Each structure stands twice: as structure tokens, then as C-alpha cells.
Length: 95
Length: 416
Image 1 (cartoon, rainbow over the protein chains, first blue to last red):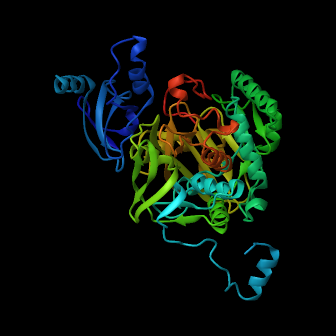
Image 2: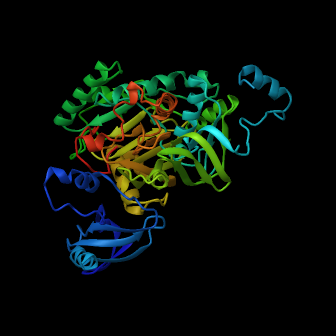
């Protein structure tokens, strides 16, 4: 797999560390009443077959956090944006 | 037909022309008492023990590919019961006991070979941890021996004992551990289940799960709707996809694990050995190839093939442990899809839907568990409650805070 880092260009997969699904949103509250949201965030996964957005750290490169869009069935990489840009876009979508 | 030396002689006399198929290929009936989704090791052993232990034979096993085309034929064939935690050890030891009697039980040669599983340690703290785990095993009645460096050297003189970074300090040996011919496990269970009346239906993919009033009523498949009273899911790497058909979201991610086999060599490694400073495990098959593997690639995947960086990493670990491996040529490598649970332990349980049962989350330790997994899942389905052996493998343990985290690392889908 080759990943197009927005800062470094196309780089091989061994430079990157994968964290996993970028979709779950960390609950904003520590209130025990939000335990179900925390359970969902920490443990449950959609685990899709196909298109997947995931957090990836360019640990062997610019050390930026990225969100890579990839197909989990074919390993085809569609693109990568910085996690900051991705969060901004997601906020925009929700608003 | 019962397989024996007499059946072999009889068929040899007639030129081996009269062997009959080991199982039927029936068309699906419109209705079964119990349907199992997944014709791999766990699904087939579940059907076998449903028939044998519980007398339930109106059972179908639905397999989307061919029988045993998934992880039962892709693993590195290791069996062991060298766990630490109380919720794990009795279960895996029961699996070991079932392995020990399996071939007589299902009348099939699965080449169960108790050649010993040796974990190497490379630091003093690691040796302490091994002593603790060995003691935990012995408390649960499992055999465990802590070996010093010289005892390991006697068994395997060609390891790198004086490696500057990973010197070998000793090892934890389970002599009853070993290897099993993995495909034969699927075939033996399939034959045993089929002969008791279970329908094994290949090339039958489940496309939907139908429920009514919180109860399972059947499954849609590419060969039509099949009605059932109880439905057991044993879909391994595809568990999330199948469970989603019933509206469930699981604490599971699917990852790819690669395995490798070398060219055939003369007898070289007579047991199973694992490297303690990296992730590498190796044994030698009866054909002579070294069968080895390492860690998952580390990203979500349903691809059944990995990437080269992990190939390099696994072989580096192997060469660090056994320098002479550097001259061995790798013949093949392949990948399987692991259902990685969030605490590294499996799930064998009922679900919130009446009549729907789940067997999943085997990470990459599912092969050794095949007999006990089927045995416990059959019990859970037949009695509608878990057996005490799988009582720790409840689905709601994550919500309740009763994780079975053998590594003590917290919620992450890269444990085993």
C-alpha cells in the first residue's frame, strides 16, 4: 500500500502507524449517564467491508495525524487528508 | 463406513475404487431446528457436538464458500492450553483434552501430534512472568515446565543464545501442546456431523437474518429462505457483517494475519517454538516445510492477503531467533481474516434476540479452540445458557467491565 501524505507525498505503508476507525466520536461529557456513549466509543465498531476512513499516524515521516480513506477489501487507497482538516469537514457536515 | 485398518485393506484390495464420499451434498430443506452460519472449524464442530452430545440432528451448516475454506485451512496448526487467566485456562484445557481423544471420537486421522510448545524468554522479568503463568496453568491442572537456558539449548542447540539484544534465558514448555493437521479437523467434524444427520450445505451464502417479535425466524440465502428456530453465528472474520444483518454492532475489528511455509527440509525443529522478543512462532510440518507466522498487519482488512513490511518483520524475528533460517527459502505466504475482539478473548454467548447465538472474536487463537468452542457453543445453543467453561466469554462483558484481557493492555483490537 502507498499512502499519499498531504505533507510528504506518496510514501510506503511501513512509515505509517494505523490507529483504526475515524468515525466514532469521543463523547464530550464524563457524566456517568453518558456511559452508553462511552461504551459505544471505546468498544463497538462498524468494521465495514469496503470504503473505510481511518486514523493513521505518519510516524516514520512528518509525524502528522492523517485520515486515510481505503478499501478494506482490496486495500486500494483513495486519499488522505490531515486529521485536522477531516475534523473541520466533519464539524461542518454536522452543523 | 467406519475407517480402520480393515477398511483400508479391503479398499486397497479393490484398487481404492470403492471409497464413498465422506459427507453428502444435500439441498437445503425449507426448515431446520438449528442453523449454523459458517462451515469452518467452529461451525462444523458445533454441529458435530449438537448431534453427538445433545441428540439434535435437524441441523444445517451453511457455508458460503466450500467446506473449510476459511481460517481452519489457513492457520499455523498449533494447539496449546498455556493461558494465565482463570476464565481462559479451563476452557483451553478442555479443548486440549478433546484434542487428545478427537481421532478416536470422530474416527478420522487428524494427525494430532503432541510435540510440545516452547515459549522462549529473553529477560529476567519475562522469566518471572513465565513462572507465574506456568504456576497458573498447574493450578488449573495443565502441564507446564519452566526450563533454564541449558535445558532449552539441549532441545534446540541451533538458536541464537547469545544474541546481544535478545539472549535466550529459558523457556516455558507445555509438552502436551503441539500441532494438528488442520484441514483434517474440518473434514473429520464434517463427516461426523453428516453421518449423524446434519446437512452441510456449501456455496450457500446468508444474505439476511429474519426476526419477528424479538425472535429469530430464519435466514435468507442465495438458495432461498430457510426457516429455523435457533440460529448460531460462527462466521469468524465476517462476524461483523453477519451480525449486522440482525442489527447488531460487535466489539470486533477484522484484520489480516499472514502465515508462511518454507521449502521442505530434513527434520530440523521437532516441536513448536515461539520467540519471546518479537512475534514469531514456528513448527515443522510432516512434509518438512517450516510453518511460521507472526503478528497481524495492523490495519482493518477483509482482503485475505497482507503487505510486504509484515513479511519482512516476521522473517527478521525468525532470523533473530534462529540464524540458520536466513538461508531457508519461503515457498508460500497467505493471509486470513481474524475477528479481533477488543480484549483479545472470544465470545460464545446468547444475544438479546431470542434464538440467536454468537460465536466470534477468536482473534488469532481460534484453531486450538476448535473442539471446545464447538462443544461449548453446542451446549449454549441446546440449553439456551452458557456452560461454566464459556461463562467468561459473555458478549456483555465489555459493557459490564469484565474484560478477559490476557495481556493486560486495555481496549484495543490487536490482542490475541
